[in-house]
Image (cartoon, rainbow, N blue to C red):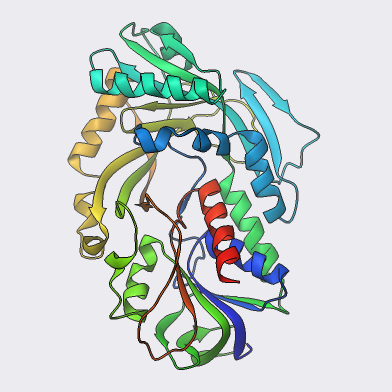
Length: 406
């Protein structure tokens, strides 16, 4: 491995890969360092924008626009080394834009349904506001009530509940995020001449001309001195908070304008559905976002239902010392899933296939911030925020960071 690089990027997930690709296009050499042996261990990207919680910030028209097929494909396709396919789902009907590559990542156009029980006046107000904003954005929402809501809710079975209503948005997209990011990683790993990706990095500290770190590569292992001529970019996700505190020991993270600056805890549950799940709908009820989980082009007979459950929010300062087992998979969580499956979906029992706890920043003002403080290093350094969450937000923020620093 060479000793001098134009840019060194520290981070996990998709954001450093997108930024590295942009820098390589400018003729820069890039080294990516990741503390995890699995590059995507943190799993910091969501395949869709959850639009949660339904409040003024989450129902802005530009967010809806970014989840439509045309702007989403315009963002994804230049960043991926191959085709990104698109299909529209509606019941048993699947419409492809062209002959598809079965191994390519897909953008899925599905209906999005927000549901509220009639006795929840606060949630009803949010749903009505959602309808108004979607109408103003030209998305053509529909009001659904009772059986119309139930028959379209993924996994619903049994007696139709007449005491519910919802808002349907017919064309909201999600992304086959696993295929997208794995394909990009494999492509970039082949670019040996001006890019190197090293995982399992430890012992990181700043030096006068760059940084030092313990690296294990195919060539050798040990403490390496890395000279940086252009700049250091650190992509801030919850997993990277410990590194950031070690790199800039005296830097006050609260001095960065982060808005609310909290970490949203999520739980992603995969359940075995008692009946085949209609893959053409993504539905939301309370703290649950629900959809059929599959990879690639659609087929028939899904039996796996994904539940993305919003948990509590914690402050950045307390995240590292938090006893996360008390916030994830608690007795209250099991009770809420039991109520959701039993009282709403009308299941008499359910089986859990897997649970994936996730922690994502809840940014109000994401951006890229120059780190100004006295350090042993003279290398320009930037802290990049907004590197987790929905895939479209991650990609856009990573591209904006490169425009600012290069």
